[in-house]
Image (cartoon, rainbow, N blue to C red; front, side, top):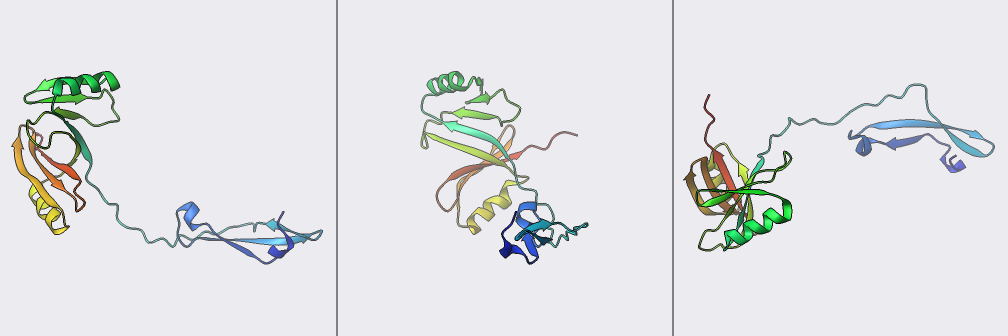
Length: 174
């Protein structure tokens, strides 16, 4: 029961809770024995005044990389720690996490700086426009586009110095 001070109509903004900005629900009250009792009208009209935007399609994170000095030691650690399957693939080691929910990755021992790092790769349709865009947004190109068997990759940094990778995959044969 509501206190007597709530006798007038009470308008509850339900927009945030329901995901509709600007939705109002009017609830009337009647007084019983000195207290106001909420009394819903027989029909409640809810009007959605939300401005709808077209859905945005962001770029997915598709790969991770762990950099190290000693790939044997690093491989043993992650294999034992998380039951990951690690297999040699050229100069790097592919990581299969064994989960359909995660993303694949690899372990790399570059033999030069940076030696210890963890980064992720974002899938892009074409690297060049993103390398141009990072400069306009105050970031840097750390490693320009390099061809690899599966496509091209590049490393960029945000204005704070965080390094991530871009991955442009080869087109799938039709």
